[in-house]
Amino acid sequence: MAYLYTRYLIPKFERYFRSGLILDVGCGKGGLEALIKTIPEKNFEAEFIGIDVSLNSLSTAKTFMKNLVCAVAGRLPFRDKAFVAAFSVEVIEHLPKEQGYCHIKEMERVSKNLVVLTTPSHFFVQDPCEIAHVKHPMMHRSLWKSNEFKRLGYSVEGLHPAREYIPALLSKWIPYLACNTLAYKVLLIDS
Figure (cartoon, helix red, strand yellow):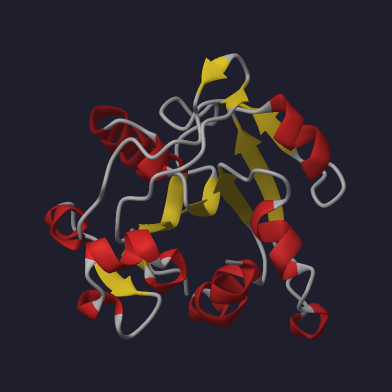
């Protein structure tokens, strides 16, 4: 997965990583800041704040990130327009639909310039696990299609050019063939 993001996501939104405050919702064990550090030649100077619901993940993320907050995606503990951009990489599919829509609204509330979400374009069956006393938080609970993001005013792309041609059934048998959806909304052009 890291390859997809360093190859496609980071270059596409490179200008937002140059300076300012970036929110990484669902940063897990290191998130975007860890990926950014793998590209030292770019001189990215943005400051990151990572949030995650898992204290275990956040304790691991301390290795890569200095600003961490334990919070849920649908109730972000930040003031309006506090961030240059808000990113949520592979998070929304772990929320029920209603909470996913709250997550999107909260990201739009706290970002002044850009909101970016990625999600698998197919539903995956995953092994159960338990984090923060929530049974099976890593299980996929919703599938987000391109048209749902488009109705909310998002631009939508695949992180692989053949994304639309890979049948969901085939992706169950060969998971690496399934690709991801990139949805983003520019709220205000930062000059």
